[in-house]
Length: 491
Image (cartoon, rainbow, N blue to C red; front, top):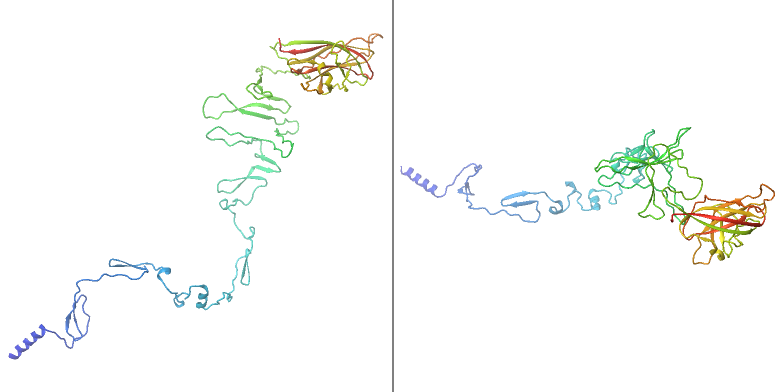
Protein backbone atom coordinates (compact mmCIF):
# COMPACT_ATOMS: atom_id res chain seq x y z
CA UNK A 1 0.00 0.00 0.00
CA UNK A 2 2.84 2.27 0.80
CA UNK A 3 4.24 1.57 -2.63
CA UNK A 4 1.03 2.35 -4.41
CA UNK A 5 0.56 5.51 -2.49
CA UNK A 6 4.05 6.65 -3.20
CA UNK A 7 3.51 5.99 -6.89
CA UNK A 8 0.35 8.01 -7.00
CA UNK A 9 2.10 10.81 -5.15
CA UNK A 10 4.88 10.85 -7.66
CA UNK A 11 2.46 10.69 -10.55
CA UNK A 12 0.55 13.71 -9.31
CA UNK A 13 3.75 15.56 -8.80
CA UNK A 14 4.81 14.69 -12.33
CA UNK A 15 1.58 16.06 -13.86
CA UNK A 16 1.77 19.21 -11.80
CA UNK A 17 5.14 20.02 -13.23
CA UNK A 18 6.25 18.81 -16.63
CA UNK A 19 4.53 16.02 -18.54
CA UNK A 20 6.54 13.95 -20.93
CA UNK A 21 5.15 11.45 -23.39
CA UNK A 22 7.23 8.57 -24.54
CA UNK A 23 6.60 6.31 -27.50
CA UNK A 24 3.88 8.67 -28.86
CA UNK A 25 3.02 8.36 -32.56
CA UNK A 26 3.21 11.43 -34.81
CA UNK A 27 -0.06 13.11 -36.03
CA UNK A 28 -1.77 16.33 -37.03
CA UNK A 29 -3.02 18.74 -34.46
CA UNK A 30 -6.70 19.41 -34.97
CA UNK A 31 -7.63 22.75 -36.48
CA UNK A 32 -7.87 25.37 -33.78
CA UNK A 33 -5.83 23.32 -31.28
CA UNK A 34 -3.56 25.11 -28.81
CA UNK A 35 -1.46 22.14 -27.39
CA UNK A 36 1.64 20.71 -28.95
CA UNK A 37 4.98 19.02 -28.20
CA UNK A 38 8.29 20.73 -28.09
CA UNK A 39 11.58 19.14 -29.10
CA UNK A 40 11.73 17.15 -25.84
CA UNK A 41 8.28 15.73 -26.31
CA UNK A 42 7.02 17.90 -23.55
CA UNK A 43 3.43 19.01 -23.84
CA UNK A 44 3.28 22.78 -24.30
CA UNK A 45 0.53 25.32 -24.92
CA UNK A 46 0.89 27.70 -27.84
CA UNK A 47 1.05 31.47 -27.23
CA UNK A 48 -2.19 33.23 -28.02
CA UNK A 49 -1.52 36.57 -29.67
CA UNK A 50 -3.63 39.37 -28.32
CA UNK A 51 -3.53 41.45 -31.73
CA UNK A 52 -2.28 41.41 -35.41
CA UNK A 53 0.01 43.91 -37.21
CA UNK A 54 -1.56 45.81 -40.19
CA UNK A 55 -0.74 44.43 -43.66
CA UNK A 56 0.98 46.98 -45.99
CA UNK A 57 2.27 47.04 -49.57
CA UNK A 58 5.64 48.34 -50.72
CA UNK A 59 6.78 49.37 -54.22
CA UNK A 60 5.24 51.57 -56.93
CA UNK A 61 3.55 49.11 -59.36
CA UNK A 62 -0.20 49.08 -58.79
CA UNK A 63 -1.17 45.69 -60.14
CA UNK A 64 -1.92 44.85 -56.43
CA UNK A 65 -3.64 47.35 -54.18
CA UNK A 66 -4.82 47.15 -50.57
CA UNK A 67 -7.65 48.77 -48.68
CA UNK A 68 -7.72 47.94 -44.95
CA UNK A 69 -7.06 44.19 -44.76
CA UNK A 70 -8.46 43.59 -48.31
CA UNK A 71 -5.91 42.96 -51.11
CA UNK A 72 -7.09 43.56 -54.74
CA UNK A 73 -5.48 42.08 -57.84
CA UNK A 74 -5.49 44.57 -60.75
CA UNK A 75 -4.51 44.26 -64.41
CA UNK A 76 -0.79 44.28 -65.06
CA UNK A 77 0.33 47.21 -67.25
CA UNK A 78 3.19 45.96 -69.40
CA UNK A 79 4.65 49.45 -69.78
CA UNK A 80 4.69 50.30 -66.03
CA UNK A 81 4.50 47.05 -64.04
CA UNK A 82 6.93 44.80 -65.99
CA UNK A 83 10.65 45.14 -66.46
CA UNK A 84 13.02 43.25 -68.69
CA UNK A 85 12.15 41.39 -71.94
CA UNK A 86 9.93 38.35 -72.29
CA UNK A 87 12.17 35.40 -73.17
CA UNK A 88 11.67 33.43 -76.36
CA UNK A 89 10.88 30.33 -74.25
CA UNK A 90 7.88 32.17 -72.80
CA UNK A 91 6.62 33.33 -76.18
CA UNK A 92 8.53 36.64 -76.42
CA UNK A 93 11.43 37.94 -78.48
CA UNK A 94 13.84 38.72 -75.60
CA UNK A 95 14.42 42.13 -77.27
CA UNK A 96 12.99 45.63 -77.48
CA UNK A 97 13.83 46.35 -81.15
CA UNK A 98 13.52 44.67 -84.55
CA UNK A 99 17.20 43.83 -84.92
CA UNK A 100 17.35 42.31 -81.43
CA UNK A 101 14.20 40.30 -82.12
CA UNK A 102 15.64 38.91 -85.34
CA UNK A 103 18.80 37.96 -83.47
CA UNK A 104 16.87 36.28 -80.62
CA UNK A 105 14.62 34.40 -83.02
CA UNK A 106 17.51 33.37 -85.22
CA UNK A 107 16.34 35.00 -88.48
CA UNK A 108 18.34 37.08 -90.98
CA UNK A 109 19.35 40.28 -89.21
CA UNK A 110 19.17 42.27 -92.52
CA UNK A 111 15.55 41.29 -93.07
CA UNK A 112 16.21 39.79 -96.52
CA UNK A 113 15.33 36.24 -95.73
CA UNK A 114 13.43 35.10 -98.83
CA UNK A 115 13.19 31.50 -97.90
CA UNK A 116 9.39 31.68 -98.37
CA UNK A 117 8.13 33.38 -101.57
CA UNK A 118 5.28 35.89 -101.47
CA UNK A 119 2.48 35.21 -104.00
CA UNK A 120 -0.64 37.00 -105.22
CA UNK A 121 -4.03 35.45 -105.86
CA UNK A 122 -6.92 36.73 -107.98
CA UNK A 123 -7.13 38.19 -111.50
CA UNK A 124 -7.18 42.03 -111.03
CA UNK A 125 -3.77 43.49 -111.82
CA UNK A 126 -3.81 46.72 -109.82
CA UNK A 127 -1.15 44.95 -107.67
CA UNK A 128 1.59 42.86 -109.34
CA UNK A 129 4.62 41.03 -107.96
CA UNK A 130 8.01 40.21 -109.43
CA UNK A 131 10.20 38.12 -107.16
CA UNK A 132 9.73 39.74 -103.79
CA UNK A 133 8.89 43.23 -105.22
CA UNK A 134 5.24 44.24 -105.09
CA UNK A 135 4.15 47.00 -107.52
CA UNK A 136 1.05 49.18 -107.05
CA UNK A 137 -0.57 49.89 -110.46
CA UNK A 138 -3.50 52.13 -111.42
CA UNK A 139 -6.92 50.67 -110.75
CA UNK A 140 -8.88 49.99 -113.93
CA UNK A 141 -12.47 50.95 -113.06
CA UNK A 142 -13.77 48.69 -115.83
CA UNK A 143 -11.77 45.53 -115.08
CA UNK A 144 -10.79 45.85 -111.42
CA UNK A 145 -13.98 47.26 -109.84
CA UNK A 146 -17.42 45.64 -109.53
CA UNK A 147 -20.76 47.10 -108.49
CA UNK A 148 -22.17 50.67 -108.85
CA UNK A 149 -20.78 53.55 -106.81
CA UNK A 150 -23.73 54.98 -104.83
CA UNK A 151 -24.56 58.69 -104.52
CA UNK A 152 -23.56 58.61 -100.84
CA UNK A 153 -20.00 57.67 -101.85
CA UNK A 154 -19.69 60.29 -104.58
CA UNK A 155 -21.13 58.26 -107.46
CA UNK A 156 -24.33 58.43 -109.49
CA UNK A 157 -25.90 55.17 -108.37
CA UNK A 158 -26.71 54.47 -112.05
CA UNK A 159 -25.07 52.34 -114.72
CA UNK A 160 -26.66 53.93 -117.82
CA UNK A 161 -27.86 57.48 -118.63
CA UNK A 162 -29.94 58.61 -121.61
CA UNK A 163 -27.96 60.69 -124.11
CA UNK A 164 -28.29 64.49 -123.68
CA UNK A 165 -30.73 64.10 -120.80
CA UNK A 166 -30.44 66.49 -117.87
CA UNK A 167 -29.68 64.75 -114.57
CA UNK A 168 -31.71 65.31 -111.42
CA UNK A 169 -31.10 64.08 -107.88
CA UNK A 170 -33.33 62.52 -105.25
CA UNK A 171 -31.50 62.45 -101.93
CA UNK A 172 -29.21 59.42 -101.76
CA UNK A 173 -31.13 57.53 -104.46
CA UNK A 174 -29.62 57.03 -107.90
CA UNK A 175 -29.35 60.09 -110.18
CA UNK A 176 -32.24 60.28 -112.65
CA UNK A 177 -31.73 61.03 -116.36
CA UNK A 178 -34.87 62.98 -117.23
CA UNK A 179 -36.42 61.67 -120.45
CA UNK A 180 -38.49 64.88 -120.79
CA UNK A 181 -35.61 67.31 -120.26
CA UNK A 182 -32.59 67.27 -122.59
CA UNK A 183 -29.93 69.65 -123.87
CA UNK A 184 -28.01 69.30 -127.13
CA UNK A 185 -26.06 71.84 -129.21
CA UNK A 186 -27.45 74.89 -127.36
CA UNK A 187 -31.04 73.61 -127.64
CA UNK A 188 -32.98 72.82 -124.47
CA UNK A 189 -35.94 70.48 -125.04
CA UNK A 190 -38.61 69.94 -122.40
CA UNK A 191 -41.79 67.90 -122.35
CA UNK A 192 -42.83 64.39 -123.28
CA UNK A 193 -43.47 63.06 -126.78
CA UNK A 194 -47.11 64.16 -126.77
CA UNK A 195 -49.28 67.25 -127.37
CA UNK A 196 -49.51 68.24 -123.72
CA UNK A 197 -48.31 71.50 -122.20
CA UNK A 198 -44.82 71.91 -120.73
CA UNK A 199 -44.10 74.75 -118.29
CA UNK A 200 -41.00 76.70 -117.29
CA UNK A 201 -41.60 78.63 -114.09
CA UNK A 202 -39.80 80.14 -111.16
CA UNK A 203 -40.03 78.28 -107.85
CA UNK A 204 -42.98 79.51 -105.81
CA UNK A 205 -42.20 81.57 -102.71
CA UNK A 206 -44.01 79.81 -99.89
CA UNK A 207 -44.29 82.65 -97.36
CA UNK A 208 -44.02 85.95 -99.25
CA UNK A 209 -44.37 87.64 -102.65
CA UNK A 210 -43.25 85.69 -105.71
CA UNK A 211 -39.83 86.29 -107.24
CA UNK A 212 -39.21 87.71 -110.71
CA UNK A 213 -38.07 85.60 -113.67
CA UNK A 214 -35.79 87.15 -116.30
CA UNK A 215 -35.12 85.81 -119.80
CA UNK A 216 -32.47 87.78 -121.65
CA UNK A 217 -30.49 87.67 -124.87
CA UNK A 218 -26.71 87.40 -124.73
CA UNK A 219 -24.68 90.34 -123.48
CA UNK A 220 -21.88 91.63 -125.71
CA UNK A 221 -18.18 91.85 -124.88
CA UNK A 222 -15.72 94.29 -126.40
CA UNK A 223 -15.99 97.74 -127.89
CA UNK A 224 -19.21 98.74 -129.70
CA UNK A 225 -20.55 95.19 -129.91
CA UNK A 226 -24.30 94.62 -130.25
CA UNK A 227 -26.26 92.61 -127.71
CA UNK A 228 -28.13 89.47 -128.69
CA UNK A 229 -31.83 89.57 -129.60
CA UNK A 230 -34.52 87.79 -127.59
CA UNK A 231 -36.86 85.99 -129.97
CA UNK A 232 -40.05 84.15 -129.02
CA UNK A 233 -41.57 81.70 -131.51
CA UNK A 234 -44.89 79.98 -131.86
CA UNK A 235 -44.83 76.38 -133.01
CA UNK A 236 -44.43 75.74 -136.74
CA UNK A 237 -47.27 73.99 -138.54
CA UNK A 238 -47.24 71.60 -141.45
CA UNK A 239 -49.27 71.80 -144.64
CA UNK A 240 -52.15 74.25 -144.55
CA UNK A 241 -52.64 74.08 -140.76
CA UNK A 242 -52.26 77.24 -138.68
CA UNK A 243 -49.01 77.83 -136.84
CA UNK A 244 -48.82 78.48 -133.12
CA UNK A 245 -49.43 81.98 -131.80
CA UNK A 246 -47.39 83.83 -129.16
CA UNK A 247 -49.70 84.57 -126.24
CA UNK A 248 -48.82 86.74 -123.26
CA UNK A 249 -50.78 86.38 -120.03
CA UNK A 250 -50.66 88.34 -116.78
CA UNK A 251 -52.00 87.52 -113.35
CA UNK A 252 -55.49 88.85 -112.79
CA UNK A 253 -56.16 91.64 -110.29
CA UNK A 254 -59.12 93.19 -108.48
CA UNK A 255 -59.95 90.07 -106.48
CA UNK A 256 -60.93 89.88 -102.82
CA UNK A 257 -58.39 89.52 -100.03
CA UNK A 258 -57.11 86.02 -99.23
CA UNK A 259 -54.41 83.43 -99.84
CA UNK A 260 -55.95 81.58 -102.81
CA UNK A 261 -53.95 81.84 -106.02
CA UNK A 262 -55.83 83.81 -108.66
CA UNK A 263 -56.01 83.06 -112.37
CA UNK A 264 -54.44 84.81 -115.37
CA UNK A 265 -55.75 86.97 -118.23
CA UNK A 266 -54.58 87.04 -121.84
CA UNK A 267 -53.02 90.45 -122.45
CA UNK A 268 -51.74 90.03 -125.99
CA UNK A 269 -51.86 87.36 -128.65
CA UNK A 270 -49.53 87.59 -131.64
CA UNK A 271 -51.41 85.52 -134.19
CA UNK A 272 -50.10 83.56 -137.12
CA UNK A 273 -51.98 85.75 -139.62
CA UNK A 274 -49.82 88.68 -138.57
CA UNK A 275 -52.51 90.35 -136.48
CA UNK A 276 -51.99 91.26 -132.83
CA UNK A 277 -54.88 90.84 -130.43
CA UNK A 278 -54.71 93.10 -127.39
CA UNK A 279 -56.89 93.19 -124.31
CA UNK A 280 -57.08 96.37 -122.24
CA UNK A 281 -55.57 99.78 -122.89
CA UNK A 282 -52.32 100.87 -124.50
CA UNK A 283 -50.38 103.22 -122.24
CA UNK A 284 -47.51 105.28 -123.64
CA UNK A 285 -44.95 106.71 -121.26
CA UNK A 286 -43.33 109.07 -123.72
CA UNK A 287 -39.69 109.99 -124.14
CA UNK A 288 -39.19 110.77 -120.42
CA UNK A 289 -40.40 108.35 -117.72
CA UNK A 290 -42.44 110.33 -115.23
CA UNK A 291 -45.84 110.38 -113.55
CA UNK A 292 -47.67 111.29 -116.79
CA UNK A 293 -48.71 108.83 -119.49
CA UNK A 294 -50.99 108.80 -122.55
CA UNK A 295 -53.59 106.04 -122.51
CA UNK A 296 -55.01 104.72 -125.77
CA UNK A 297 -58.35 103.25 -124.69
CA UNK A 298 -60.72 101.17 -126.83
CA UNK A 299 -64.46 101.12 -126.14
CA UNK A 300 -65.65 97.53 -125.84
CA UNK A 301 -66.90 96.73 -129.38
CA UNK A 302 -70.32 95.14 -129.99
CA UNK A 303 -69.23 94.08 -133.51
CA UNK A 304 -66.02 93.86 -135.51
CA UNK A 305 -64.65 97.31 -136.23
CA UNK A 306 -61.84 98.46 -138.54
CA UNK A 307 -59.94 101.74 -138.31
CA UNK A 308 -57.64 102.31 -141.28
CA UNK A 309 -54.53 104.47 -140.96
CA UNK A 310 -53.73 106.12 -144.30
CA UNK A 311 -50.48 105.53 -146.11
CA UNK A 312 -49.11 108.89 -145.09
CA UNK A 313 -46.95 110.47 -142.44
CA UNK A 314 -48.37 113.14 -140.19
CA UNK A 315 -50.44 113.76 -137.09
CA UNK A 316 -53.80 112.09 -136.50
CA UNK A 317 -56.69 114.42 -135.71
CA UNK A 318 -58.75 113.87 -132.58
CA UNK A 319 -62.42 114.54 -132.11
CA UNK A 320 -63.31 116.92 -129.33
CA UNK A 321 -60.17 119.00 -129.92
CA UNK A 322 -60.51 122.47 -131.47
CA UNK A 323 -57.57 123.12 -133.76
CA UNK A 324 -56.67 126.52 -135.14
CA UNK A 325 -55.31 126.80 -138.66
CA UNK A 326 -52.74 129.46 -139.43
CA UNK A 327 -51.98 130.63 -142.98
CA UNK A 328 -48.79 132.19 -144.33
CA UNK A 329 -48.82 133.53 -147.91
CA UNK A 330 -45.89 134.60 -150.07
CA UNK A 331 -44.81 134.94 -153.68
CA UNK A 332 -41.49 134.27 -155.25
CA UNK A 333 -39.77 133.88 -158.59
CA UNK A 334 -36.50 132.40 -159.71
CA UNK A 335 -34.56 131.49 -162.78
CA UNK A 336 -34.14 127.79 -162.16
CA UNK A 337 -31.07 125.94 -163.46
CA UNK A 338 -31.35 123.12 -165.98
CA UNK A 339 -29.68 120.59 -163.62
CA UNK A 340 -32.70 120.56 -161.31
CA UNK A 341 -30.95 122.12 -158.26
CA UNK A 342 -33.24 123.78 -155.76
CA UNK A 343 -33.36 127.58 -155.58
CA UNK A 344 -34.35 129.37 -152.35
CA UNK A 345 -34.74 132.81 -150.82
CA UNK A 346 -32.23 135.54 -151.41
CA UNK A 347 -30.90 137.81 -148.69
CA UNK A 348 -33.59 140.40 -149.66
CA UNK A 349 -36.43 138.38 -148.20
CA UNK A 350 -39.21 136.03 -149.13
CA UNK A 351 -41.57 138.17 -151.26
CA UNK A 352 -41.24 140.37 -154.33
CA UNK A 353 -37.61 139.50 -154.86
CA UNK A 354 -35.82 137.04 -157.10
CA UNK A 355 -34.71 133.87 -155.35
CA UNK A 356 -31.09 133.51 -156.42
CA UNK A 357 -29.57 131.10 -153.89
CA UNK A 358 -28.65 127.77 -155.49
CA UNK A 359 -28.53 125.04 -152.82
CA UNK A 360 -26.51 122.66 -155.00
CA UNK A 361 -28.86 119.69 -154.81
CA UNK A 362 -32.33 118.85 -156.12
CA UNK A 363 -33.52 115.65 -154.39
CA UNK A 364 -37.28 115.06 -154.39
CA UNK A 365 -37.71 112.23 -151.85
CA UNK A 366 -39.86 113.48 -148.98
CA UNK A 367 -38.44 112.90 -145.47
CA UNK A 368 -35.09 111.81 -146.98
CA UNK A 369 -33.65 114.39 -149.38
CA UNK A 370 -31.75 117.25 -147.71
CA UNK A 371 -30.36 120.65 -148.64
CA UNK A 372 -27.68 122.70 -146.88
CA UNK A 373 -28.55 126.28 -145.97
CA UNK A 374 -25.60 128.70 -146.32
CA UNK A 375 -24.62 130.82 -143.34
CA UNK A 376 -25.66 134.03 -145.12
CA UNK A 377 -29.24 132.81 -145.62
CA UNK A 378 -30.04 131.33 -142.21
CA UNK A 379 -32.30 134.27 -141.32
CA UNK A 380 -34.27 134.26 -144.62
CA UNK A 381 -36.53 131.31 -143.78
CA UNK A 382 -39.93 131.26 -142.06
CA UNK A 383 -39.43 130.75 -138.30
CA UNK A 384 -42.01 128.59 -136.49
CA UNK A 385 -43.04 130.44 -133.28
CA UNK A 386 -44.82 127.57 -131.45
CA UNK A 387 -45.56 123.87 -131.64
CA UNK A 388 -47.70 123.13 -134.66
CA UNK A 389 -48.30 120.77 -137.56
CA UNK A 390 -47.33 121.60 -141.15
CA UNK A 391 -50.48 120.57 -142.99
CA UNK A 392 -49.01 121.55 -146.38
CA UNK A 393 -49.55 124.24 -148.94
CA UNK A 394 -51.82 125.40 -151.76
CA UNK A 395 -50.17 127.23 -154.65
CA UNK A 396 -49.99 128.34 -158.29
CA UNK A 397 -46.94 127.92 -160.51
CA UNK A 398 -46.28 129.76 -163.76
CA UNK A 399 -43.32 128.91 -165.95
CA UNK A 400 -41.95 130.55 -169.07
CA UNK A 401 -41.99 127.78 -171.62
CA UNK A 402 -43.90 124.53 -171.87
CA UNK A 403 -42.01 122.69 -169.19
CA UNK A 404 -42.62 121.03 -165.83
CA UNK A 405 -41.52 122.77 -162.63
CA UNK A 406 -41.31 121.63 -159.01
CA UNK A 407 -41.86 123.28 -155.63
CA UNK A 408 -41.18 122.08 -152.09
CA UNK A 409 -40.66 122.94 -148.43
CA UNK A 410 -37.49 122.07 -146.48
CA UNK A 411 -37.56 122.16 -142.66
CA UNK A 412 -34.72 122.15 -140.15
CA UNK A 413 -33.40 123.58 -136.90
CA UNK A 414 -30.32 125.79 -137.04
CA UNK A 415 -27.71 125.93 -134.31
CA UNK A 416 -28.56 129.21 -132.69
CA UNK A 417 -25.83 131.56 -131.52
CA UNK A 418 -23.46 129.86 -133.96
CA UNK A 419 -22.38 131.01 -137.43
CA UNK A 420 -22.60 127.69 -139.30
CA UNK A 421 -24.49 126.03 -142.13
CA UNK A 422 -27.20 123.51 -141.29
CA UNK A 423 -29.17 120.85 -143.16
CA UNK A 424 -32.88 120.91 -143.81
CA UNK A 425 -34.96 117.91 -144.87
CA UNK A 426 -37.55 117.99 -147.67
CA UNK A 427 -40.97 117.63 -145.95
CA UNK A 428 -43.33 118.63 -148.83
CA UNK A 429 -43.08 118.31 -152.62
CA UNK A 430 -45.14 118.70 -155.79
CA UNK A 431 -44.50 119.09 -159.52
CA UNK A 432 -46.77 120.87 -161.99
CA UNK A 433 -46.98 119.67 -165.59
CA UNK A 434 -47.58 122.56 -168.04
CA UNK A 435 -46.34 120.77 -171.12
CA UNK A 436 -49.82 120.83 -172.74
CA UNK A 437 -52.89 123.04 -172.87
CA UNK A 438 -56.22 123.68 -174.63
CA UNK A 439 -54.54 125.70 -177.36
CA UNK A 440 -51.17 126.65 -178.69
CA UNK A 441 -50.88 129.64 -176.37
CA UNK A 442 -50.13 127.75 -173.17
CA UNK A 443 -46.82 129.39 -172.30
CA UNK A 444 -46.85 130.98 -168.85
CA UNK A 445 -50.22 129.43 -167.97
CA UNK A 446 -50.70 129.20 -164.12
CA UNK A 447 -51.06 125.63 -162.82
CA UNK A 448 -52.15 124.39 -159.38
CA UNK A 449 -49.47 122.70 -157.30
CA UNK A 450 -50.99 121.65 -153.93
CA UNK A 451 -49.92 119.32 -151.15
CA UNK A 452 -52.20 119.44 -148.08
CA UNK A 453 -51.40 115.99 -146.66
CA UNK A 454 -47.94 116.61 -145.23
CA UNK A 455 -48.91 116.54 -141.50
CA UNK A 456 -45.37 117.08 -140.25
CA UNK A 457 -45.06 118.03 -136.56
CA UNK A 458 -42.83 120.98 -135.74
CA UNK A 459 -41.84 122.77 -132.56
CA UNK A 460 -40.85 126.31 -131.79
CA UNK A 461 -37.52 127.13 -133.45
CA UNK A 462 -37.97 125.12 -136.63
CA UNK A 463 -37.31 127.08 -139.84
CA UNK A 464 -39.15 126.55 -143.17
CA UNK A 465 -37.36 127.26 -146.48
CA UNK A 466 -39.50 127.36 -149.70
CA UNK A 467 -37.83 125.72 -152.74
CA UNK A 468 -38.29 126.17 -156.56
CA UNK A 469 -36.72 124.00 -159.24
CA UNK A 470 -36.99 122.50 -162.70
CA UNK A 471 -37.92 118.97 -163.66
CA UNK A 472 -37.05 119.34 -167.36
CA UNK A 473 -33.44 119.78 -168.41
CA UNK A 474 -33.57 123.48 -169.23
CA UNK A 475 -33.30 126.82 -167.49
CA UNK A 476 -36.25 129.16 -167.31
CA UNK A 477 -38.11 131.60 -165.07
CA UNK A 478 -40.64 130.18 -162.61
CA UNK A 479 -43.12 132.13 -160.49
CA UNK A 480 -44.73 130.71 -157.35
CA UNK A 481 -47.72 132.02 -155.40
CA UNK A 482 -48.03 129.93 -152.23
CA UNK A 483 -50.07 129.77 -149.02
CA UNK A 484 -48.73 127.61 -146.15
CA UNK A 485 -51.22 125.92 -143.83
CA UNK A 486 -50.27 125.30 -140.17
CA UNK A 487 -52.43 123.58 -137.56
CA UNK A 488 -52.11 124.43 -133.91
CA UNK A 489 -53.99 124.15 -130.61
CA UNK A 490 -53.66 127.88 -130.07
CA UNK A 491 -57.02 129.74 -130.07
